[in-house]
Image (cartoon, rainbow over all chains, first blue to last red; front, side, top):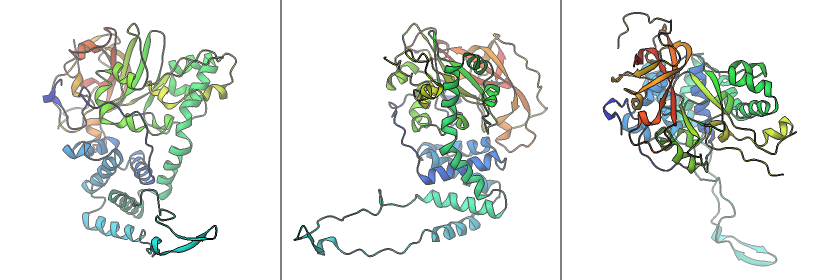
Length: 331
Length: 102
C-alpha cells in the first residue's frame, strides 16, 4: 500500500486491496431517503458546508466503515450540529423521545393460529402458519432514523429549514434526477451538433436543454471511443453528479470500488462484465473536488434512424459512470 | 491550521506542464488523496477558481478562492505493480497549493 504514513483517515482508501465488488444496487429505504434529503437540504442551504460534514464523518475513525453509508453521513450531520451548537445534548435527547412517541401504535393481539379451526372446502382444519406477516422484515426503522427526525424537527423549530426543503429533495431524487443524464445522452446520440457542444461545455449544453442542475459543481463530459475507455470513482467519499444521475448506486459508495478501481481498473471492469482490450487506454477519473463527470457511451451499432426516445431506452446509469457499455443492437 | 495570506487567484501552472504533487501530510479535511502525493504527472486543464475545501471544512466563511487543475498521471507512475497497459492513465483534481513544478 503506497504512502501509508500519509493516509488522512479511514476514508482515504484509494489503492487499498479489498473485496470483489458486489455490483448489485440494493436501493434505499425510506429512512435512508429522509436522512439523505435532510443532509442535502442542510448543506445546499449553506447551514453547514459539505466539507464540514465530510470532515466530521472522516473523524469517526474505526467506526467509519463499521457504519453503513447513510447512517455514517446522517450521524456526521448530527455530530456537526452539536459541535456548531445548533442544539445541545439534552435538547436533542428530549426531541428524540418526542419523535419516538409518534411511532407508538397499539399492538394488536392476534389469536394463536394453531387454535383456530375453520372450514376450507367444507373441511375443518387448523393452520400451522400465520396467514400473513405484519411487514416484510418485521422490524421498524433503525435508531439513527430517530436522531435524523429529531435533528430535522429542531432545525425546523429554529427556522433553519422547512419540511418542504427535505421532502422536495426526496421527491426530486425519485422523480427527476435519475432521468436527466439519460435524456442528455440520448440527445447527444441523436444530434451530432449537440454532442459536440456537450463535450466542449457540458454545463452550458445541459442548461440549454432546459435542465437546471441544482449543484455547485461543474460538469465535464468525456466520450468513450475506440482508443479510450473512461470510468469514474470518488476514492475519498462519494462525489457523483447526483442532480444528473440521481443517487449513486450501492457499489459506487462501497469500500471495494473506491479502493480498487484506481489501481486495478481493468479487473474491476471485468467484475461488471466489461472487458477492455489491452490496446485501448483505460482512463480513471477520481472525482475528488469541484468537477463532476458524465460519460458519453458510443452509440450502439444497429440504431440508425432511431428516435431520441428509442435510443434512451438503451441507456442505463452504469453506462454513464463507465463501468458498463451499452450493447450493439442486432437487427 | 493557519493561512497567512489570501491565496493568489491567477493560475500558476499551464496546460501540459509537468508537475509533481506535494509529498507532505495534512491535518483536517483535504481533497488530495494520499496515493497521489509525491507522484509526477502533467496538467490536463485549469478548471477555474474554487473555495479551499480545507478552510470550508473548518467553517471559515471567507475561505480562499484558489485555482483548481485536473492533473493526469500514467498508472505505472503511480503504482509500481500496476498490471494494465502502459497507456492507462488516471486523472484527478488538485488545488494549486498541492502542486509543485516537476
